[in-house]
Length: 253
Image (cartoon, rainbow, N blue to C red):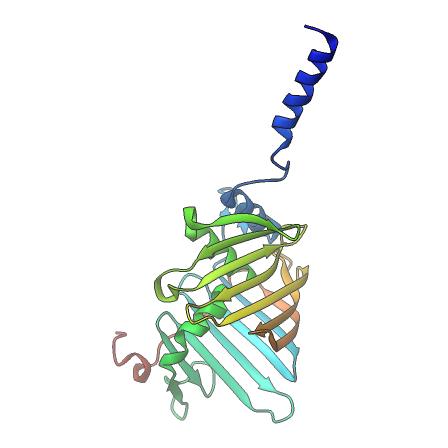
C-alpha cells in the first residue's frame, strides 16, 4: 500500500463517521435531556417527579394565577383584570370544563359553577402546552415522537392522543435544552404558539425546578397573552379540582 493510498483510506473513514452530527440523538434521549434541564427528573429513582404546580404572574392588563395537576389532568386559571377588577376563573378536569365565581364554586352556598363543555379541549391543550406538560406528552408519544433540526434548533414533533386526538404538537428546545416554544395545530388548522424564555427557579422554597419568567402566547399569529411570571410552587403543592354536580351531571360520587 502506498502512502497516498493510506491517506485516502483514512480520509474515507473519517468521512463515514462524520456524516451524522455529533449532537444528533433520538427523540427519547432529547426528551430526557430536556426534562433534566427543567429539573423534572428527581429522587434516587431518577424519575419525573413533577405532578402538580402553581405559578403567578402579571401582564396584558391582568394578574394571573394558575394551579394544575398533570396526574388528574386538570387546570385552574384565575385572572383578575386590573382595569375592572373583574375576576375570571376557568377550570378543566378531564372531559369537564366550567367557570367559577370563586375557586371551588359549586360546593359552597352563594357560589356559582357554570358548565363550559365546549371549552374542555382547548383548556386541556393549554395544560399540556406548558413546558413541563409538553415534555410529558412527548414522552407518552413514545415511538411517534420524532426529532429534527430546524434552523439550527432541536424540534420534537408528535401527535397528541385521547381527548386531544387530532392535534399535532412541536416542541422547540434552546441551546440549554429548555423548552423555548410549543406549537399546536388542530385538524381544523388552528395554530397556537407559546414562547418561553428566561428560565429561573422562582420558588419561595428553592427546588432547582426551572420555570420561564416570560411567556408569550399567539393564536394564528396574533398575540393573545404576554406574561411576566413572578413566583412558582413546583414542590407538588396540594391542589384540587372537584367537578361540581351541575357540571358532571351527578357522575361523581
